[in-house]
Amino acid sequence: MKKGIHFLKKHFIATLVILLWIKTVAISFISFQLPIHSWVDIVLIVISPLGIIMIILGFGFLFKKQVPPVTMLIIYLLMIGLVYANLLYYRFYIDFVTVSVFLQLHNVGGLGPSTAELVSPFDLLLFLDLIILGLVVIRIKKTKQKQPVPNKKKYTIISMTLVVLTFVLALTKNPYLLETGYNRKELVQSLGLYNYQIVNMIDGLKAPIMKVLADETDVEEITSNVGRKPTRAHEEFGIAKGKNLVLISLESTQNFVINQKINGEEITPFLNDFIKNSYYFTNIYDQAAQGKTSDAEFMINTGLYPLPSGSVFVRRSTNEFYSLPKILANKRNYTAVSFHGNDATFWNREEMYETLGYKRFFSKKDYHVTDENSVNYGIKDIPFFEQSMNKLKTLPEPYMANFLTLTNHFPFLLDEEDQTIRPADTSVEVVNRYVTTVNYEDAALRRFFELVKEKGLYEDSIFVIYGDHYGISQKYEKGVYELLERQDTPLNHLQLQRLPVIIHVPGEQGKIVNTVGGTIDIYATILELMGIRDDQFINFSQNLFTKDDKDPVIFRNGSIVTIDYAYIGGSCYDKKSGETVDTTKCEKYLKKARKELQTSDELILGDLFRFIPY
Ligand code: GP9
Ligand code: MN
Image 1: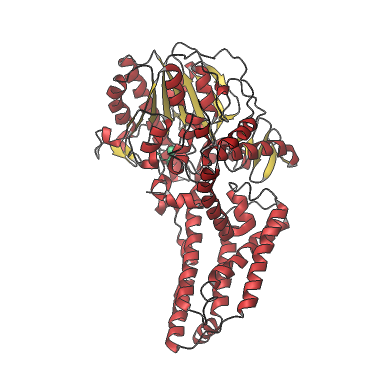
Image 2: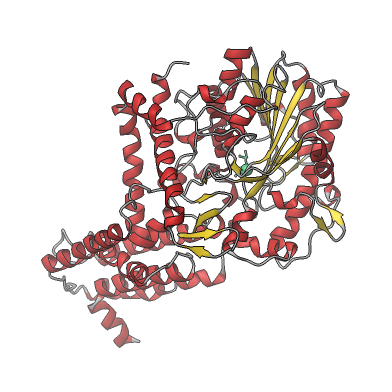
């Protein structure tokens, strides 16, 4: 033991570098499912962290005459902390931490009451060496001997060369790597966790500069880039003209629950009936990113993509935007309001709603919230709808009313007395509970429609009901596969990312629409139903009644899906055969994805709508 400590003391720097390197590489292989297509990918995962680890740990001694062991151990600990933060975040979101996520941490609902759920006893392995390293540091302090400092010149050259080599290799493999900085899995796989974090930080710094540098001249280029085709005529155009528009966001609701039975009981009996007299869109994919519900709201309100990192609601709430509330107010004299039982400041809604043109936000403080009528993140959906009714009744018509439900939020908690369906019996508790909270949400919708009918608010309205984003993260998907008796494959995972979108216009029969689309397309679809041509405004949304299935649905990480192909996890799939095919088959869609995402980011980060008159 003594000998060992003596050895570590002598080679303190090398020990820290190697330990951190091994841990980082091990986690990259074991915990982050990074796509590996060739030996270059493996080489990159192995070498990419080394150079930058040397540089960062080197700060502890490069500018000093001798090695300060405590400082170095602290740097080491911080770096392990960073790895661990990413590990926890990854377990739930299958994504990596960005600077924006740190800044909006108080809003990242998913990690709040559920961190315990994400921790594993094996995580201790990451920190065990700290005991021995601590002893070594005490020993160094006690003996008061000078620690040998490596040859600084050599150390710097080796570490710099490793970093440069990493970037050269990574960019040779994918020249678009830095341009598509939103594909975080690929960034981490090619540059390693630490270089990725630095690239992300630089991106974050670029954002405010983009706004300052932007001017009218940028708009022309953007407008030509968006290049919108005029929307084809269709019989649903204008069928809801002049009606009140009611939007209902279904928290964490995925499409697989519709028409699905558990032990002979329907999970969503109300919706299963309701879709028979509605437009039910069966192939709408979740395009939300790190902003979760707020991203879905942003897409539906503006027809723009969410930001590559963080939430537009938090990062860009003082921008100018075209939005449904503003368009409806300008063209049709609508008043827009929003209803949500959580704090007004959560996800910065209070500020962003004003920017988007909402005239009033009924938030937690407008509801009678007690311990009895709350669960998990706030007031339960049934009392939420009940208490909203009188507020809705007093609105001047025509109105746009936006409702956000909340009960069906991870980790899907529900009081026994509210459970009207037995939990599922898969091996994943989260999925078993999910069934009960979705079933409660369905009952809340039933209550909502009873009430609007009772109050005479039904006939003159159009109702747009949509799942905001996935509820069952990939970590827990195994339970869903058990429930649906399906295999865990990349394409089945993709299919699970579909969300229910239901549009109900009283007096219209409705129909099932199988168009392949995404959350962003709800915007144009609503405008068209309201009798306003969607192509007058700059946006990336496509009317779902006329959208071409061959046009890709674009995910924020640059992946795509069309009726024929899907590009996910770095592979191109032929959806019919389920086989991977040559990437060239997906390339034209990926090109479109890069261009659209980049243009949308430029519009938002440059705050370009301030130069575009209505
Ligand atoms: C809570 C709502 C839900 O106000 O935003 O949380 P999220 O789904 O965004 O984590
Ligand atoms: Mn949500």
